Image 1 (cartoon, rainbow, N blue to C red):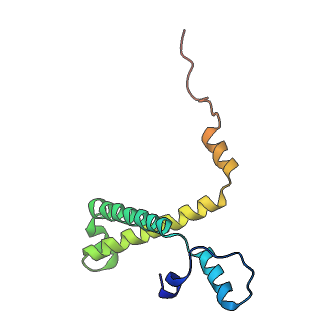
Image 2: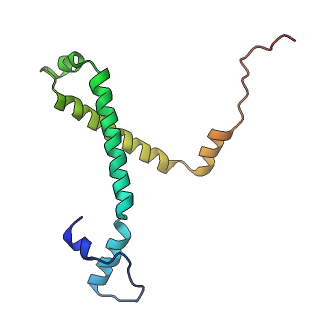
Image 3: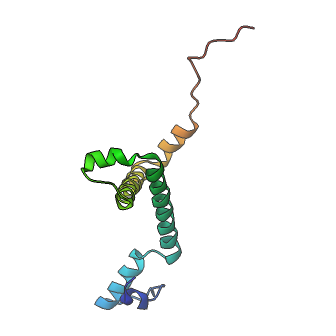
Length: 123
């Protein structure tokens, strides 16, 4: 966080003031998420990145990537692959969560769907 934003109060007074400084402070207070939320988001992204990097190191054959890249594969290449996959997954999840409404999610989760393909059991 920049030094200017650290100096701003976390709670903005509701007194009407049209000065540019007060407008800037109000805008910054609305747009700047609280530190605990930001810290949790960063921690969750770091965990996703670490798990994806472990998966890339353990599951992706380095020879496969080396053939496509045309040079030997090092740890930095696998971490870059994990970073790309984690970032794309985060963006896709955010877009998917933003486009769905609560009713569609509830309907998909709790809708009764009988198994029509199962044969009847003899009695």
